[in-house]
Image 1 (cartoon, rainbow, N blue to C red):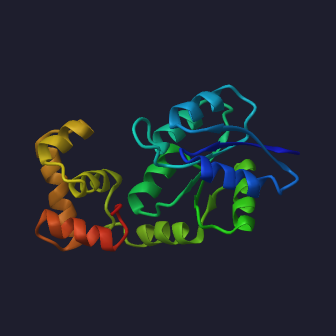
Image 2: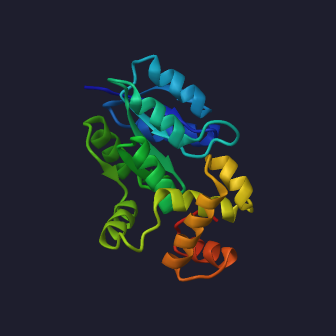
Image 3: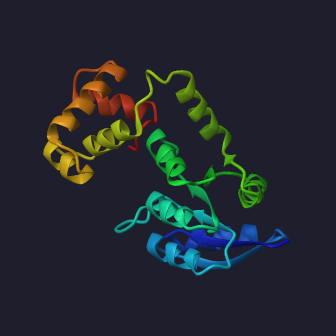
Length: 208
């Protein structure tokens, strides 16, 4: 049985490289490519695709996690395997909660990529070892782990947004934003926004 693939990445060189690797597998067929997350959603909805290899960052517009949620919400839709350079807790949690059945890093060897595609096509979980390790760490110490919302707030703090701007971006009250930051400070053992961002970046909880 041939696994029909959709490559979703905004870099043509990356898509060409993926196609070259995947074309060496006799049971794979790259049937479509998308340079935007929006286009990936359209192509996935059109049918004829078994697995979507989804990047997370597409520049302006829809994020890869949003596209993943839209694709996996459709009954009988394709499986989504995230293939990205980001291995932060914030990115991993967003993708998994959006419905991705796998999460792989772009530096994965070809044989690991092929195995992950077959696993995803079979409807099973395909996680890079490093990603699985980070998720296990969160499960072992749930009281210390930042929640998805806390990670979202902290990521925006790291991007230089004020509490007022964060409240608008996430549709939260400023009091709720402050409450999340209080919890973040306590879990990270810090007492300032700058220290929280530095600590979270060092632990790869948020992007640099």
